[in-house]
Image (cartoon, rainbow, N blue to C red):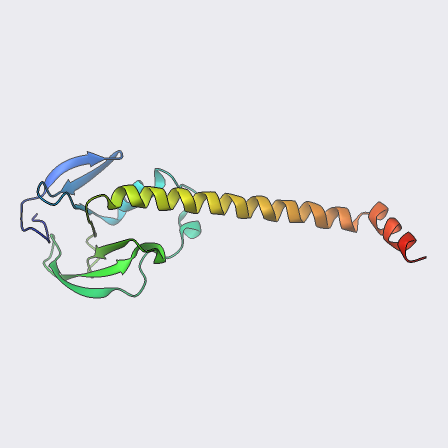
Length: 145
């Protein structure tokens, strides 16, 4: 496979415990869907439903897919400012140099936000339960008498 940016032969490498095809020139990398999922799961392994939709509003590029030569489409990863390319035939994703580190950071932030949301929901549930308790209702009635 050749780099869609440099047209240099991609080299098999391992980054963040994920097998990738990396360009020795521009340091970009090619990941199939399973490899990208594996990269995301290094920091956020709460299930696909919690990660949200991956590709939003992809725009055509001039770079070819390393697998099928179809023109890659550029999109903002999970609607963040991180741009990456996707093969329209679902062969994989092109990440520019350093984008894998940014994916890990974004997934860590996403997991933190998710955990905060779960914690807030649990706290709200406990608050509602206390409010529905007899002792709370008695105190509330006493306030108005």
